[in-house]
Image (tube, rainbow, N blue to C red; front, side, top):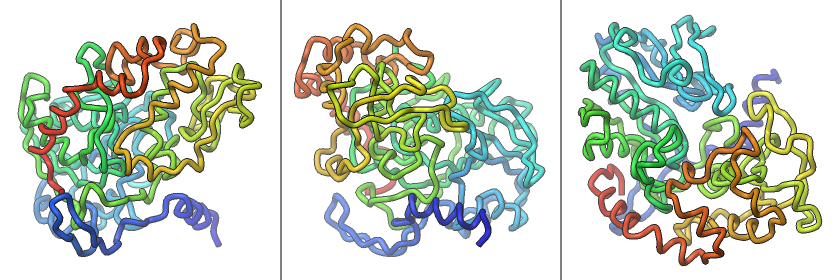
Length: 410
């Protein structure tokens, strides 16, 4: 067996294709039974190939842009679609750049098509880059979390296309965390590259639905409206379990990490390693100063393409092992887990350092991640989870109501 085949088989052993191509038979929130073969938007080529005929096409894509075992780019080219350029988001078109690392423009080695990075010198396509384009396809797998940057890439694309009178076609894909909505609503004063709009941490939308929300709520720059076409998932509901066939980014490399991510990514704003520098990021939490408090330990190292200089590199970290945590709990509670933040703060012998982002270049600020000002002080003051959650209202409930206007799926 060739190395490439072995690697692909190993990847599928981690990211089992439990949803793609399955026969979906489940009850929606309205009580109606939904049945039929599930398909992503990209798989339904009969719905969008005719719309691309005779047009100059660009695509914003990465390694998750697949149709079966082919890339969407390869399928477009094989079917004589006039693909003139590729835009790449964070981690690049091929998905092999580390988090936060700027990606340069290039020519894709396989296809010979120019690749323009939207995570380098600029994050929005320029007028010149769109001049020879009629429609831009957005085909990227999201994970349904506010601080995951692909929805920001979608917003920048829509803004550029609206101003330059270009159409955006979204090939929709499921949201693996789409079965719940939770977290505080982003306060505009904490707007950043990991949070642009007043949505909760877990927003409960597919990218197609989010695009409609961006238009409908007037959130695009200068309140412009972008012409969008969404190719919907077939036979899909938000409650449907979906395990991605390809890892969406280097450090979300297991189904477990994707479901834990809305909760454990908060530790990017805390002086604790959250698994970067290991093969199990976002599923372990630890620090050298927990020695003697927790038995579980691991040692983060520099890993090219994942985390070259992780926090506490080459130091033994002690803490929590969540690799076997029952993620069905999220389905039952419909809540992110903030008890781990509360627990580890109480356990910390260096409480003054817990939220100190000046201690490591690998840390962000907790306010930008959570999206509100009071979370830090609530943890320090020993507030209960119930008290913290109460402070997220009425904003969270108001968002849930507003969200209903943009749903494409039950």
